[in-house]
Amino acid sequence: MNTLIDGAGLARALRTRLHEQVARLPRRPGLAVIVVGDNPASAVYVRNKIRACEEVGLMSEKIALPADISEQALLAQIDQLNARADIDGILVQLPLPAHIPVQSTIDHVAVAKDVDGLHTHNLGALLTGSPAVVPCTPAAVLALLDAIECPIRGREAVVIGASNVVGKPVALLLLQRGATVTVCNSKTTDLAAAARRADIVIAAAGRPGLITGAMLKPGSVVIDVGINRLADGKLAGDVDFASACTVAGRITPVPGGVGPMTVAMLVANTVAAAERTLGLPAIP
Image (cartoon, rainbow, N blue to C red; front, side, top):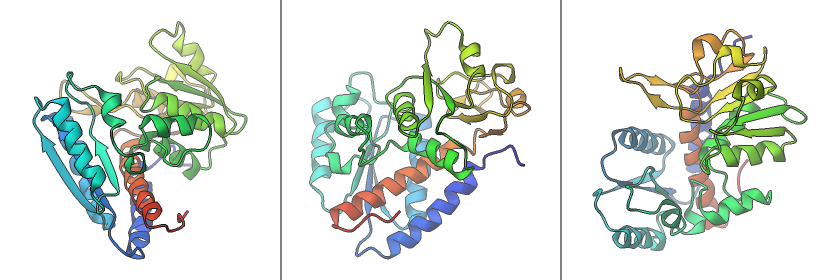
């Protein structure tokens, strides 16, 4: 059995299905991406998202705003997009400049257009087990587990990282699927012991090479959410791939694992938002 989980290939297959789905809609779904400042990593991510939208047949619009924009001006831009009938999804690209509060900015996006799933309303719905929109990266993690038919119910899962964007939502999704979940953070006293218990490890701490093969249970499934830019310009995950791939039963690479699926899930969420706006039943 191939150890590698091919997130890029699975994302291509999903985009193909979404393209067929979009072709049956009465109009093209629209996604607006707001970028504040000129963060180089954000530019790459946004370019990938817009390319994926074009491939599937969505209308996409990038709104580039200066890093020194005021909070009021940014919210006014969001108000304009909230009012546009041709825009089904609004994504505020993170990170934002330090003077812009993150959660209140995200919460200014209309709930129905929050295709990133990070609005307080949508996160609350996820907590109660009835989400209309699942955050893109956690949705990608679950999609990858499902694609390899990884058993979740009754298994022990360890999530490393407790952010609102990945760690907490993915822990909730795993709980809803019947896993026993441990969430580790920077205060965890023995990370290796916690990881070694896990049948499923989700690494989302933002620290390159944090998880090594010696910290893994043989045969475990490892999903590496980390995307870290090293000093030499190369990308690395939170998992030391060279040592981990000799222990793990299945593992995602970086790049080519969670990243492409996250972008595909953003497109899927936008298509689903358009279907809800049009009053159409969601297509599984």
